[in-house]
Image (cartoon, rainbow, N blue to C red):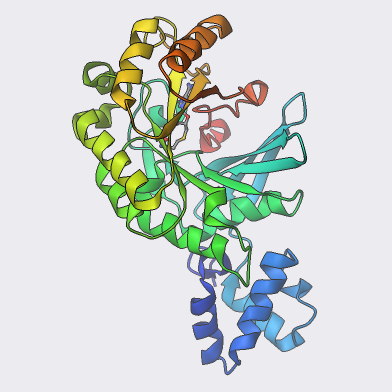
Length: 351
Ligand code: SAH
């Protein structure tokens, strides 16, 4: 079968795989064995599932696409702590994902930053992905396989939907992917180890709150007033701050999980003490966390990264007003793997 029409293994929930294999006359434990082999033993192909009869391995390989991503390129930052991979999808599109290795005090932990769409429709002017426009949603399996690629190399403890695309605009597939990540017979990832970052789609934030999941929510705020946010995140005209903040409050009240507000700082645009004070006022009493991101260079030259001292001053201002604010360490800038630098521009370079 042509690759594009064959069902991808990683798109199947355990229940769906059981249904498919039941049609082949297999008892339910067979699907669990497959899930276990691919997601817990991390076998790279059905041939590696040596506890299955040969005929069944062949049937799986004939029927299901695995992998559905092809690794095209990989790069490591000079300190070796950030790795970026460029993948080709079955239809020829390309996406990027990032692995971040952290050294903790007691133990090390690793985070995979996943893309949820090819491109992005939300056109934030400082973000490289946003400049290239939207191509298509990713399927759940295409997200799961980004994770698998890195999980086969290192133990991955966290997943963040902070790569290319707007995860809440691809709601169904992102939720399906999260279900696959959390499957106890498979990857067994806890919801608390998964974070979705959104440009601020208020209705979908409310919907996510109702899922009864403990998934972390990060909101790309970047501005404390509607006038400024309209220019930095154009979707603010559709869901202005009042509506967005109400949805965030609802998320906290429903899940009891503190929302993280991401705030990328750009010189002279949103990085003055005045904006810090306005931000503190906006977030007021809401239990939350502010994650300051020193702006990363992108194609748009008017967005110049705030220097370290300005970021520190902004943080101090917030802390002085009682907000929990941390500074996100910039990573992987030498391989264009920083926040807002993913483009997945593979075709462009071919031509
Ligand atoms: N669409 C989602 C997921 C993308 S996450 C969202 O908007 O949250 C990528 C994060 O990097 C977002 O917080 C985004 O606003 C931020 N970002 C984009 N461009 C950036 C840049 N040039 N410097 C720093 N952060 C940037």
